[in-house]
Amino acid sequence: MKAIETVLTEEMMEALQGQNIVFCNAHHQEIGKVLSSALSWVFAVDDQTVRFAVDSKSKLLDIVKEHGEITLSFFAKESVYAISGQSGLVTEKADKMTLKMAIVEVKVNEIRDITFYGAQITQEPQFIKTYKESLIKKLDHEVKEAVYSY
Image 1 (cartoon, rainbow, N blue to C red):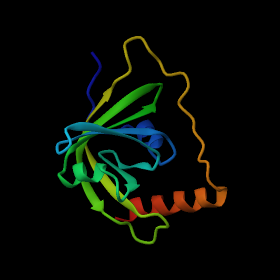
Image 2 (tube, rainbow, N blue to C red):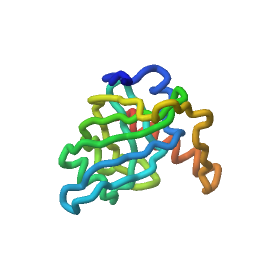
Image 3 (tube, helix red, strand yellow):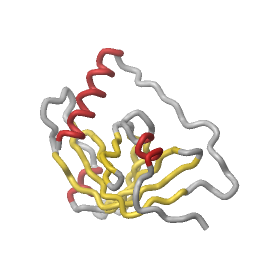
Image 4 (tube, rainbow, N blue to C red):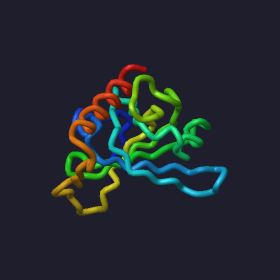
């Protein structure tokens, strides 16, 4: 059986610096469904705290406002990890941003290696942002600044 961790390792923190795909899953009580989102602006601000930016109109914020449990899944160290923790709203509308983004914080309760038995991730998913290069740099910078400024 794989160990359950309670803090992010250095390698996990490196993987969570806003440039990798992270899957977010949370149960929305009101609609009775699990909401899933693919995120890229996800940052480990320390070994027990993860913050991410999401559109300020996202349904995910309903869950966050209730301090609901969220699971963030990501690739690192040749495995897939799932962080479970309580969410909270840092700000509903981050200042000085081109896009109207909310900043969400997740306090790490546990981290599990969810890779199936006998598997090793040999290549992590890659993606490109399809908007203008100058806008990519601007938005990436704005989000990172906002995530770390609160």
